[in-house]
Structures are given as C-alpha cells and as structure tokens.
Image (cartoon, rainbow, N blue to C red; front, side, top):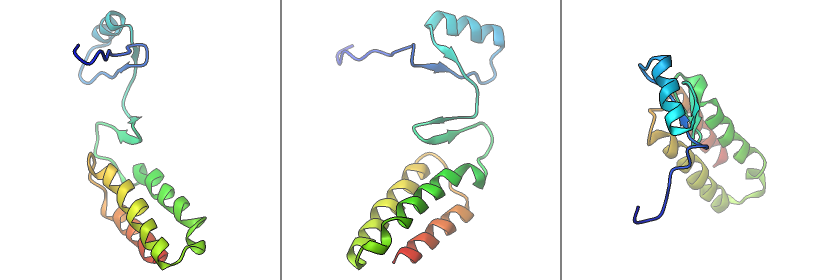
Length: 117
C-alpha cells in the first residue's frame, strides 16, 4: 500500500496445483483473473511440474547461437571476449537462478563459447 502498486488481476493467471476444477472456477471468479495450466512460460523460464528435459532448454541454446552467428565474424578478439561474457554468461545464469541446466545444454553453450573465441 505504501508504494501505490496494485495487482492487475485482468493480466494475472491462476494456475492450479492439486486443486479441484470447482474450487479453481470459484477462485478465478473471485479474483477476476483467467485460468491457466502447467506447463507455461514465465519471464522466459519454462515452468512445469516435472523435471525439465534438455529439449525444454532449446530456446536458450538457439538464442545463444543466434546472437553469435551474425556478429562474431565482424568482431576482434576483445569484442568476442565481451560477447562471451555478456551473452554466454548472462543468459544461462538467468535460467540457472531457477532451474538446473542439464549437462548436455551446458556442454553445448561451452562449445559456442570456444567457437566464438
């Protein structure tokens, strides 16, 4: 209340976990928000009940590859080092704050780092 911030329930989604459909309908109507289901993506992170498989992280790997493919040939060694530090450290770190990356995904990102340098 002190900040003046309010929840915008029209943009919010209620995702049930171990909740009956009737209870979900009642809560969604009370808060005037939409109903959702797992899996879904929140802030670019894949959220689901089961342990994520390597295929779930394909967007992360392709995002790293896209950033590298178009620009690395035009950069000198210092620029490539900066690219490795920014892209290949920041994007995976964001994912790893919430989810544990499979070893295959880490190896693929390390391969992109080596190819860039």
